[in-house]
Image 1: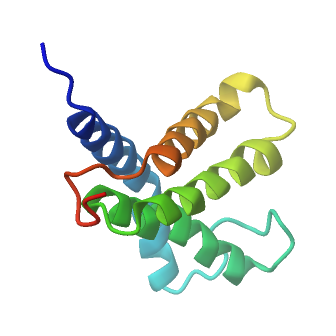
Image 2: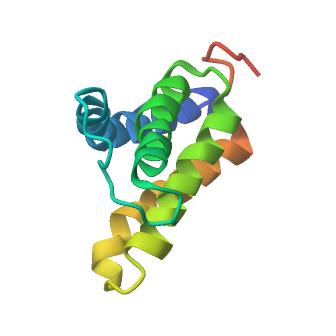
Length: 124
């Protein structure tokens, strides 16, 4: 069987980002609905800025990753968001609680390292 890394990258990009959107869409809707403190203030920059950064990492970046536009940069943004979730928000929690954030972190790091592949808007 012939290997096709571009199809593998497509499956990884779309699958991981679509699952991330299940977290990002509700936060995006809350933010545009007027809630300026969607996620609290885990990094000390204020509730509104924290909420905007989380929506950027959990909604905007995954949409860009799915279509393959600015994929590496978007994956870095999503990975940073998941690093904050795992190592700051859930720092004191057991590994089972932070496991989902760590899995997303690893997946987005892989996408950032490999890029979108040929089946994307970027086509690199």
